[in-house]
Length: 148
Image 1 (cartoon, helix red, strand yellow):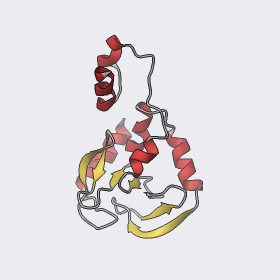
Image 2 (tube, helix red, strand yellow):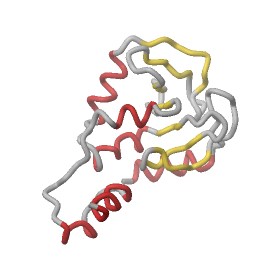
Image 3 (cartoon, helix red, strand yellow):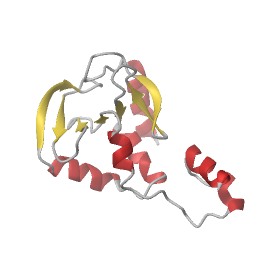
Image 4 (cartoon, one colour):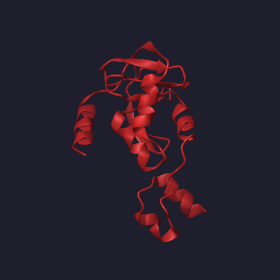
């Protein structure tokens, strides 16, 4: 937990810039996951710890995801990492996804995060209706369960 706290402090002090158009990124919800969004190009930046947190709502293995990214065919782009620690690598196998090999943050072009998340099932850890308020699931999962 301390690592995430330190990362948040560092990011809070930085002004994150969109790798597409250079505008300032703002804390935002992206497909029910907290990240940083660009209001002009609609892209989303998720730092490594935010990518790691997807495992709590989806059947998602962050280490496997990062291994896939690093082993995929990629091209170095002219786009700077929003944290300004390196240059983003565009992943040719995943349309609309780039990542920073230095900090392992991931840039998603519009709709790329949604498309990626559709490949992973939502976690349902033996939930029953009585357990829903105390379960650790996303807000949208909670609303969907209540509306069934």
